[in-house]
Length: 187
Image 1: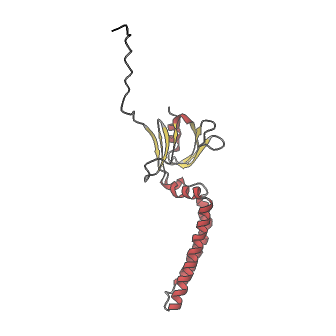
Image 2 (image 1 turned 45 degrees about the vertical axis):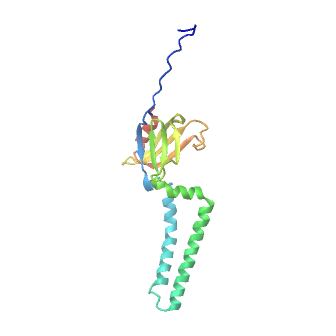
Image 3 (image 1 turned 90 degrees about the horizontal axis):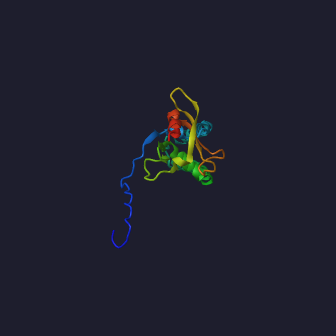
């Protein structure tokens, strides 16, 4: 100690390397990640798709042998394609988020770690959505089939912006739903 100065305490040394996250659960639900009503919707629109294919078959069979028949076949096919594209454009324009969600749903990977819950896509570096574990209160298991695929619910803190009106996020047909709920309950 010189000149009446007191000794300063030794500063705390911080670790420079990050503590790795532990992965508790990973699921790739695939087509089962689509919303529950998707397959019902496809069942109702399949007769229209089938009848459109029958009409296209009738237009193109037998193969057009004259220029007039070829012009008719091409024109009719173009009109049908334009009508289908117009209907798709109307649906997508009115519900762009829902349409994008339907396209992404089969490819989403759901990961639960000891720090966060992550929704990610294989072709994107950044996650689609991420919820810190401090915002997760736990989970509840719904009905499960014999293979372990079933319904689950993640309970979030009150007022969380990612939650529905009841403060939850629901998962339909999740692979190994019991392991998902157990991973959410771990601290």
